[in-house]
Amino acid sequence: EAGVAQSPRYKIIEKRQSVAFWCNPISGHATLYWYQQILGQGPKLLIQFQNNGVVDDSQLPKDRFSAERLKGVDSTLKIQPAKLEDSAVYLCASSHRPGDTDTQYFGPGTRLTVL
Amino acid sequence: DQQVKQNSPSLSVQEGRISILNCDYTNSMFDYFLWYKKYPAEGPTFLISISSIKDKNEDGRFTVFLNKSAKHLSLHIVPSQPGDSAVYFCAASLSGNTPLVFGKGTRLSVIA
Image 1 (cartoon, rainbow over the protein chains, first blue to last red):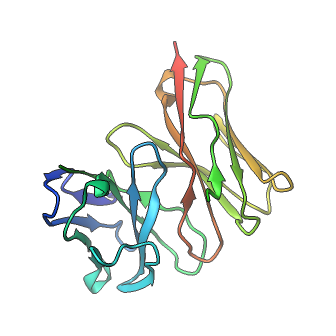
Image 2: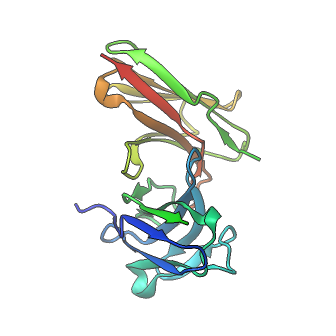
């Protein structure tokens, strides 16, 4: 079974520029999560999708971050404009069963550096 | 306010000995707990989990213990191997498809 795919793996941009990350979850997984992991911290949820609907985006800085999951499969996370404090690893995870506690499987992450 | 705490940033253990990683949580509503292992430049990899209805779950060399009254869980690795060297994250969630809340991680070094 293929794992969660993410691209790009690394991205370096200057502040105020825009950037987008892509995630392809494990086939058949209905739930998709984006987490932000700042150096020295554990991952922190940004947004959770159930199929193509948003379940939880309470911690997403909506003035600059946006995410979508068209057709309930792939997802993109965008930052516009980026700030220095957005430097982090952005992790995508997916899980199988909605409405049930289930293991989340993570992709390799995208390391973003904002200069 | 950190709901999941891993108070030891790092731990060194000799190969063949037991590694014990600890985790405390504050939200008594959490009922599902997981441990993830993370190598550099990779995403976290699921290791083992435990539901709040149990106090122990074992998978090969890995055992997780849960003490609900103390809001404490621990991961035991026996015997420790050099390939176990990684950052270990404790995570917790509420049942019903909710996001994970992670600790800051403990870096385990297994010395040959």
